[in-house]
Image (cartoon, rainbow, N blue to C red; front, top):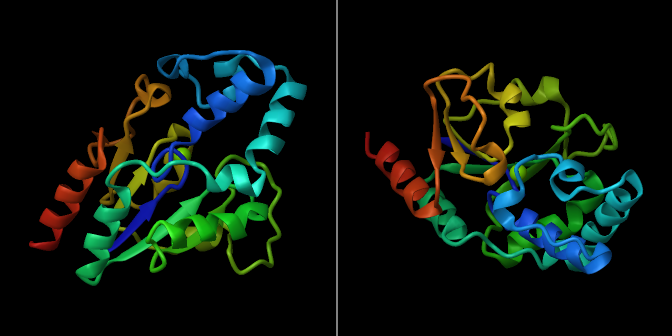
Amino acid sequence: MRIYVDFDDCLCETAKALADITARLFGKVIPYEDIRFFDLRESFGLTEEEYKELMIEAHRPEILFSFEEIPGAVKALNDWMDLGNEVFIITGRPLTSAEVSRRWLDEHGLKRARMYFLDKYGRNLNDKDNELNLEPEDFYKMHFDYAVEDSPIAFKFFEHLPDMKVMVFDRPWNRDCTFPGGNYSRCTEWGKIRDRLMAGCKK
Ligand SMILES: [Mg+2]
């Protein structure tokens, strides 16, 4: 079986790191539970210039590399791969972060996971010829049995897989969203995702 796993705020604590950077750069302290919007300009109350500065700082390799693993993610995925299943990290990060993102996966024990860059948020920054770039039409040819995603903006990429079990990683910015179908469920921690994946293997 195959699982789609989003990178930021599913594998690592990105929003918390960005909130820390925002406090450091601009003196704006945003409690985690107040990050109600996926668009950080809105959640953090940033001007366009501040947002650009935040993104430049956050994408520095040493900063991206420092994002903390969400407890249990690596173990769950490795246990699942040990049973012969496949993991695809499908991230909306820009391709410029490919090297450090790969290094993060490798050094956190996810060497076996494949990684692709899909322009989930319409940023149009990626080199279409890069082998790690995934064009939507190529993504739509792929099949997954499970998905772990935190961003409601990305749900539109799952419309072609109505039977895929989508586990929405619980975050303040997705608590008000409506799930598009009965195949969606909310997950609060990787231990429960792991249990679900392992139970699916036994069928
Ligand atoms: Mg994410």
